[in-house]
Image (cartoon, helix red, strand yellow):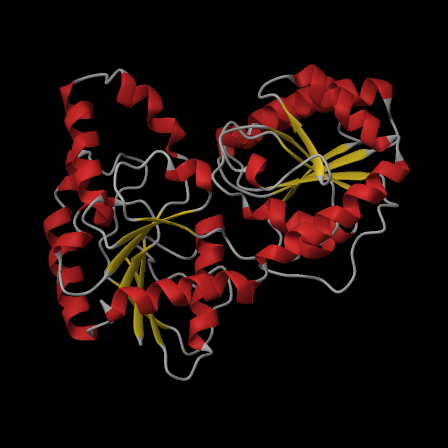
Length: 373
């Protein structure tokens, strides 16, 4: 079996890139499988995550202007070249199956290239963000673009979504629910003795870290023993906004922006609670990683990822944007060692359902079914 994974790039830290490396490495270790990763703008950079040496890489060198919309005129002019190069490369490689990982321009034309080859589209964002535009389109362009997007989605052999809530947004009958697999499953879990709360993920407004600082300011007024560590890189302007807010509240001694790390497992094992304040999520891998380390989680109940991972036995779901309840629940956990231990044990048990072999078995089954057709 030969598999092509298509993505914009693999040199920036992110959930999609990380999950791709896991899937690619899993299949590359199988003797009868060849794995190719096609990128559009790798720009000579090395992958930020480890890929097996048997994974073949090819960059098409399209290099869209990432500071502009993919549908800005300067980017639209690049699409014909993109289509031609991708069509040529797929013909040359002659894969058994093609998987589109990132949500970029190729999403909208891949189904019409080499139609005999089964094609799969992965969705790593929540369609909830489209609800407003679908109910009240800003203009005719938006209205007809969404109609075209629905049409294209129906042309894929399968759409992979990460949870049952997301599946309800699609108008086609080709959806398949496959959650993300765990990236690690440590032998030991945290002993929750460290008075450290951890958050991790891309530094971007959608992650709500500015709200987290507001929350921590209230926590600190009632409990000065704990510290908050935030791991991740991303939007420079947003990171400055967070840093300024930390200084404004005088939290420099207890809140730290730690930057990116390739040792997130170790950081989690030396923490006692994980927090998430995102505005929306799809199926955040970082929550599974936290659970595998035995971390109880306190998270906003944003659409739609956390509610598919967290339950009352493994953490706390807080009504979206209710900072008062978030502070209350977080402090309650900090002060209750028995509850922390109970949730820690249950979190670890829940995460075991997402171990690599289990989830990748679902991918293999889907691939074989599509190829056999």
